[in-house]
Amino acid sequence: MRTLSSVVQSVMAEGKTSHVCHLLTFTVGETTYRFAEDRVVHVSNLYLPHLRLDSPIRYSHRLQLEPVTVRLQNITLETAAALQAEQSDLQGVEATLERLFLKAGETVILYVGQISEIEVEEREARLTLVGDLDPTAVQVPRRKYSSLCVWDFKDANCGYVNGEDPDNPDTGQPFLTCPKDFASCQARGRAQRFPGFIHVTRELTVAIEGQLPDAHDEERMLGEFVAPWEEP
Image 1 (tube, rainbow, N blue to C red):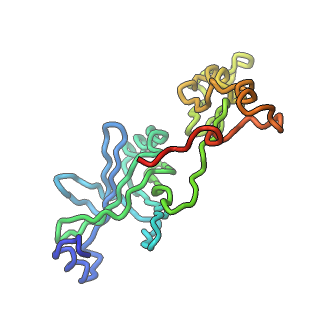
Image 2: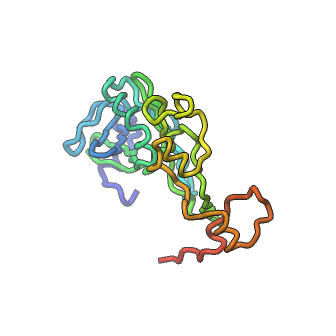
Image 3: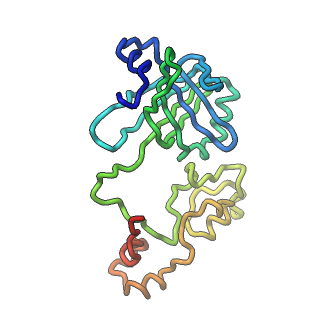
């Protein structure tokens, strides 16, 4: 409360929900989207009245933020099409959810997180925001490395689209599966999305770690023989 102005504290003390409005802001490329529960102008920015909170923002003594789901209702077909087209780019974008105290003209940031899930329909979109990792966690999982792709074929990370990306030359039809190696990724026109380490070969792994106990174990923890990051 000490960081809030006296006007905001007074509005909060009144406990009238009609005096507040939630604001959602996120930017994709050069486009900034602004939505609110009512049509409002704040700091010369117009917020369109499409925002609905599907899940409450939970306050706790923990440092970890719980996911928050917001819904954009009755959006225009143009907005829905734009969000649909940018769906893959939206994942990981930072979004800010604020509470605007109308009488005071001031906002309080409630949640800053990344967009993790997007569902777009004809006139509606649903976004799930997730916070940062819990800084009190004992251990953060170490990164796995592999010479193979880790994405699911045709998911948002892979991005392969039937009819748009190269077809299978053997059948003349879109590819149905993917062996997940770099050459296969190139053949499917997805080389720019390949997340594997093409310089990591089985021979290199064996040379560093010795003969693998399991012939099918193609992944290793990079942190097992690379020094951990140091605190700045």
